Image 1 (tube, rainbow, N blue to C red):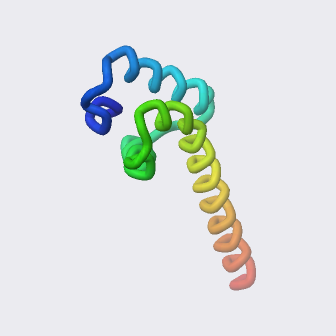
Image 2 (cartoon, rainbow, N blue to C red):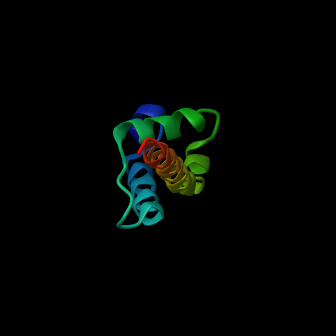
Length: 84
């Protein structure tokens, strides 16, 4: 996908991005294709170097979405307890 957004870049640069992404995500963060595509769209005005340097934003976004989902789930559970 890196090369689709940065077609003038080399395979080595794509591999550098992949390595940086794996390091940023760590072993406990799954990554959907949609999340990766969203990252590239947000970086559309960045150079390939910028996209590689900012790859930690993928993990930050995943964590933020997970936290938001947990908060919504907690609110729904609280609402269900009120119904009892």
